[in-house]
Image (cartoon, rainbow, N blue to C red; front, side, top):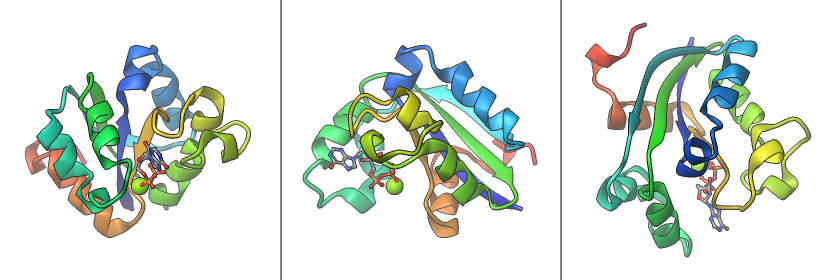
Length: 138
Ligand code: IDP
Ligand code: MG
């Protein structure tokens, strides 16, 4: 069983899409093993997205991610990393497949509703960034 980290970004929480995202997880047999709502500081967002620190969008992205509350969740399931990324859709909502979260709700390449880890190593780092072992139920 694989694990991944999901974040419902500030645009998702402020637009009332928490239930919508969780419904899609449950419909797709993806199990939530940890969840909480937090409001990251700029520094916490910079630490989370450190792999992107040289990218031109880093400052704007970390401003956005620290602009309001987010829901962070650890998820588990078979092949959950690619399966959740498939539910999310492409980073750029204009290129996302029909029926994906980003295609259905995103308005902007940055404000794209959700985050999902891209590989087992990044998932392990990202889950441990937000959750200690006592906060994970599985
Ligand atoms: P991902 O979230 O689909 O894995 P990444 O390339 O890891 O995409 O980028 C992280 C986040 O940075 C994206 O989800 C999006 O919010 C933002 N982002 C990515 N590319 C751009 C861009 O070209 N302009 C502005 N923001 C971007
Ligand atoms: Mg990514």
